[in-house]
Amino acid sequence: MKKTILIDLDGVLNTYTGVFDKDFIPPIRDGAFEFLKKLSEEYQIKLFTTRNKILASKWVIENNLESFVEDITNIKELSYLYIDDRCLKFDGSYRDLSEKIRQFQVWYKNGSLSSGEG
Image (cartoon, rainbow, N blue to C red; front, side, top):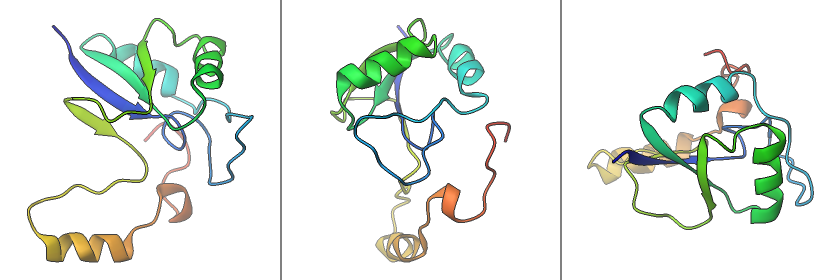
């Protein structure tokens, strides 16, 4: 049985940069197709998004990802791992976590890699 990984859609798998449109999902990021294809060989992948499930399903199909993505959910399900562009890892220290919260910026606003190649 494969372990499940929940992967966020906006800012991880697509080219979202902070401008939300409820009726439009930005294009797939470079490298996302290959990433999901490879990852799906060892893990069950679920898309984790607050977007409309029908719109997200259409995006998955339009990008030929339906053979890699098992399901789409907006519920934090039991999972081996969560991948998101807006998260922090808790390492046991609230003081460190408080500092990480104060310093947090999403990757596309702090000058990090903009292509899917990194």
